[in-house]
Image (cartoon, rainbow, N blue to C red; front, side):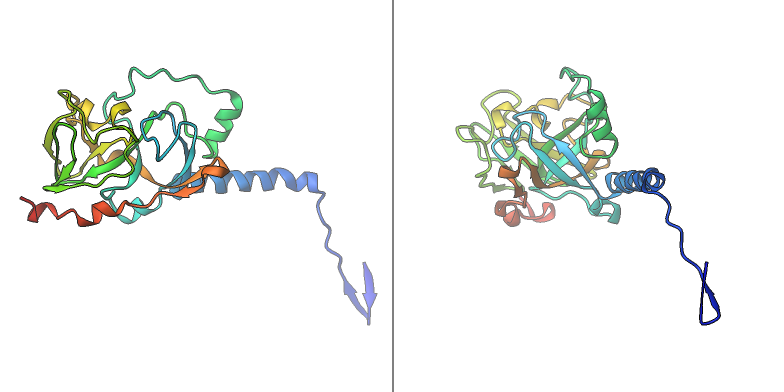
Length: 236
């Protein structure tokens, strides 16, 4: 302690960095968990069902904030959702190692136990979605122009599940993978309790950006074709 002009001055003691480090790590973990829970989460693409838009192993960032304000998924969005009713029952999952579990805890990787899927929203509540033969897919009578469909695929398939006409109930979604002939989506789960639909409440969020690998960085906007789909109330 020193005197200057008759007044005492005090010097602030700084704690050693090794003492503050646990506190800083704790704050960082809390912030990461808050971001994971309420804002954004990374999701690893587990299969080829969304090619060529997404490749197996890509990491996408999922917007989890928007649904908190009452916004529901729109046609054309790529969404991540919890398994609605055993869609992944026959899919083997490798147990994560300690490093993967740590990344999952802070939201940099999805949890292996969550069994989430990623598909494109084709129809929302009230929509009539149909496809026959080789397509095209129609929503409320409007044929979709789908340049995102995997090269060489047809919009639907000449098999019992590939030809369909459904009306989506309120609060549900009809989803399809972009790799149409390699996607076990709504078409192939019509015998479950939701008749192949995905409850809106099961949606984790919208995939907005391909974040990794760096060379594949891209946004995931809604394709223009969905802008011309008429509302269900004005459809045929």
